[in-house]
Length: 191
Image (tube, rainbow, N blue to C red; front, side, top):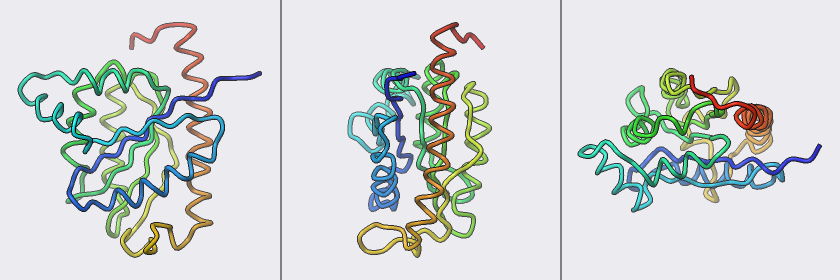
Protein backbone atom coordinates (compact mmCIF):
# COMPACT_ATOMS: atom_id res chain seq x y z
CA UNK A 1 0.00 0.00 0.00
CA UNK A 2 1.44 3.38 -1.02
CA UNK A 3 1.01 6.39 1.23
CA UNK A 4 1.74 10.06 0.80
CA UNK A 5 4.64 11.19 2.99
CA UNK A 6 3.67 12.32 6.46
CA UNK A 7 3.84 16.06 6.99
CA UNK A 8 6.00 16.37 10.09
CA UNK A 9 6.49 19.63 11.94
CA UNK A 10 9.83 20.10 13.65
CA UNK A 11 9.05 22.65 16.34
CA UNK A 12 12.11 24.48 17.65
CA UNK A 13 11.14 25.64 21.13
CA UNK A 14 14.00 27.92 22.16
CA UNK A 15 14.03 31.59 21.19
CA UNK A 16 17.12 32.69 23.14
CA UNK A 17 19.80 34.61 21.22
CA UNK A 18 22.83 32.37 20.67
CA UNK A 19 20.72 29.32 21.45
CA UNK A 20 22.17 25.82 21.33
CA UNK A 21 18.95 24.71 19.59
CA UNK A 22 20.47 25.64 16.25
CA UNK A 23 23.11 22.88 16.52
CA UNK A 24 20.65 20.28 17.73
CA UNK A 25 18.07 21.26 15.11
CA UNK A 26 20.50 21.19 12.19
CA UNK A 27 21.63 17.71 13.20
CA UNK A 28 18.08 16.41 13.66
CA UNK A 29 16.88 17.95 10.39
CA UNK A 30 19.70 16.13 8.59
CA UNK A 31 18.50 12.85 10.17
CA UNK A 32 14.82 13.30 9.29
CA UNK A 33 15.84 14.56 5.84
CA UNK A 34 17.13 11.09 4.97
CA UNK A 35 13.63 9.62 5.15
CA UNK A 36 11.35 9.40 2.13
CA UNK A 37 8.21 8.74 4.22
CA UNK A 38 8.28 12.20 5.82
CA UNK A 39 8.04 15.73 4.52
CA UNK A 40 9.61 18.14 7.01
CA UNK A 41 8.12 21.49 7.97
CA UNK A 42 10.24 23.59 10.34
CA UNK A 43 8.37 25.72 12.86
CA UNK A 44 10.99 27.88 14.52
CA UNK A 45 9.43 29.97 17.27
CA UNK A 46 12.16 32.57 16.77
CA UNK A 47 10.92 33.31 13.21
CA UNK A 48 9.89 36.98 13.24
CA UNK A 49 6.27 36.30 12.21
CA UNK A 50 5.81 33.64 14.90
CA UNK A 51 7.71 35.58 17.56
CA UNK A 52 5.51 38.62 16.91
CA UNK A 53 2.40 36.45 16.93
CA UNK A 54 3.33 34.87 20.26
CA UNK A 55 3.82 38.34 21.77
CA UNK A 56 0.35 39.30 20.56
CA UNK A 57 -1.23 36.18 22.06
CA UNK A 58 -0.65 37.68 25.48
CA UNK A 59 -3.15 40.39 24.50
CA UNK A 60 -5.43 38.68 21.98
CA UNK A 61 -5.45 34.96 22.92
CA UNK A 62 -5.08 34.05 19.26
CA UNK A 63 -2.29 32.63 17.10
CA UNK A 64 -3.75 32.15 13.59
CA UNK A 65 -0.51 31.63 11.64
CA UNK A 66 0.77 29.05 14.10
CA UNK A 67 -2.63 27.33 14.29
CA UNK A 68 -2.83 27.08 10.50
CA UNK A 69 0.67 25.61 10.30
CA UNK A 70 0.06 23.11 13.13
CA UNK A 71 -3.33 22.15 11.71
CA UNK A 72 -1.90 21.15 8.35
CA UNK A 73 0.58 18.64 9.77
CA UNK A 74 0.37 14.93 10.60
CA UNK A 75 2.79 14.84 13.52
CA UNK A 76 5.54 16.68 15.34
CA UNK A 77 8.97 16.53 16.85
CA UNK A 78 9.54 19.16 19.51
CA UNK A 79 13.14 20.22 20.02
CA UNK A 80 13.40 21.62 23.52
CA UNK A 81 16.04 22.68 25.96
CA UNK A 82 15.61 22.38 29.68
CA UNK A 83 15.72 25.74 31.43
CA UNK A 84 15.60 25.64 35.23
CA UNK A 85 14.05 22.13 35.26
CA UNK A 86 11.36 23.11 32.74
CA UNK A 87 10.75 24.01 29.12
CA UNK A 88 10.87 27.50 27.57
CA UNK A 89 8.07 30.01 28.03
CA UNK A 90 7.76 30.60 24.27
CA UNK A 91 7.10 26.89 23.79
CA UNK A 92 4.41 26.98 26.49
CA UNK A 93 2.71 29.88 24.71
CA UNK A 94 2.89 28.12 21.35
CA UNK A 95 1.38 24.90 22.67
CA UNK A 96 -1.34 26.60 24.72
CA UNK A 97 -2.60 29.01 22.09
CA UNK A 98 -3.17 26.28 19.55
CA UNK A 99 -5.67 23.69 20.74
CA UNK A 100 -7.78 21.66 18.32
CA UNK A 101 -4.93 21.47 15.81
CA UNK A 102 -2.87 19.21 18.11
CA UNK A 103 -5.63 16.62 18.55
CA UNK A 104 -5.07 12.99 17.58
CA UNK A 105 -1.55 13.63 16.31
CA UNK A 106 1.75 12.13 17.52
CA UNK A 107 4.45 14.20 19.21
CA UNK A 108 8.06 13.12 19.68
CA UNK A 109 10.83 14.93 21.53
CA UNK A 110 14.47 15.80 21.04
CA UNK A 111 15.78 17.40 24.22
CA UNK A 112 19.02 18.79 25.47
CA UNK A 113 20.40 20.32 28.61
CA UNK A 114 22.66 19.65 31.56
CA UNK A 115 22.75 16.48 33.62
CA UNK A 116 19.13 15.54 32.86
CA UNK A 117 19.49 16.13 29.12
CA UNK A 118 16.19 17.98 28.94
CA UNK A 119 14.17 15.03 30.20
CA UNK A 120 12.44 17.05 32.93
CA UNK A 121 11.20 19.44 30.23
CA UNK A 122 9.97 16.46 28.19
CA UNK A 123 8.09 14.96 31.14
CA UNK A 124 6.28 18.26 31.68
CA UNK A 125 5.48 18.53 27.97
CA UNK A 126 3.99 15.03 28.01
CA UNK A 127 1.40 16.21 30.54
CA UNK A 128 0.56 19.29 28.50
CA UNK A 129 0.23 17.39 25.22
CA UNK A 130 -1.98 14.77 26.87
CA UNK A 131 -4.36 17.60 27.75
CA UNK A 132 -4.28 18.64 24.09
CA UNK A 133 -5.33 15.09 23.12
CA UNK A 134 -2.02 14.47 21.35
CA UNK A 135 -0.17 11.15 21.55
CA UNK A 136 3.38 11.44 22.86
CA UNK A 137 5.98 8.90 21.81
CA UNK A 138 7.76 6.80 24.40
CA UNK A 139 11.31 7.03 23.05
CA UNK A 140 13.14 10.34 22.85
CA UNK A 141 16.49 11.67 21.72
CA UNK A 142 18.27 13.34 24.60
CA UNK A 143 21.61 15.10 24.87
CA UNK A 144 23.01 15.28 28.40
CA UNK A 145 25.58 18.05 28.89
CA UNK A 146 24.74 18.95 25.31
CA UNK A 147 27.49 21.51 24.76
CA UNK A 148 30.01 18.68 25.30
CA UNK A 149 28.24 16.26 22.93
CA UNK A 150 28.69 18.14 19.64
CA UNK A 151 31.80 18.98 17.64
CA UNK A 152 32.56 22.36 16.08
CA UNK A 153 30.73 21.33 12.89
CA UNK A 154 27.51 20.64 14.81
CA UNK A 155 27.75 16.84 14.63
CA UNK A 156 27.29 14.67 17.73
CA UNK A 157 30.49 13.03 18.94
CA UNK A 158 28.52 9.77 19.15
CA UNK A 159 27.05 9.93 15.66
CA UNK A 160 26.08 6.25 15.54
CA UNK A 161 24.29 6.25 18.89
CA UNK A 162 22.55 9.53 18.14
CA UNK A 163 21.48 8.34 14.68
CA UNK A 164 20.09 5.11 16.15
CA UNK A 165 18.10 7.03 18.77
CA UNK A 166 16.73 9.32 16.05
CA UNK A 167 15.79 6.32 13.89
CA UNK A 168 13.82 4.73 16.74
CA UNK A 169 11.98 8.00 17.37
CA UNK A 170 11.24 8.52 13.68
CA UNK A 171 10.07 4.93 13.17
CA UNK A 172 7.60 5.37 16.05
CA UNK A 173 6.53 8.73 14.64
CA UNK A 174 5.92 7.14 11.22
CA UNK A 175 3.75 4.37 12.69
CA UNK A 176 1.68 6.69 14.88
CA UNK A 177 1.53 9.39 12.25
CA UNK A 178 0.15 7.08 9.58
CA UNK A 179 -2.22 5.31 11.97
CA UNK A 180 -3.66 8.53 13.37
CA UNK A 181 -3.87 10.19 9.93
CA UNK A 182 -5.89 7.25 8.64
CA UNK A 183 -8.03 7.32 11.79
CA UNK A 184 -8.78 11.05 11.42
CA UNK A 185 -9.70 10.46 7.77
CA UNK A 186 -12.21 7.76 8.72
CA UNK A 187 -13.80 9.59 11.62
CA UNK A 188 -13.38 13.04 13.10
CA UNK A 189 -11.84 13.19 16.53
CA UNK A 190 -14.00 15.22 18.89
CA UNK A 191 -12.32 14.15 22.17
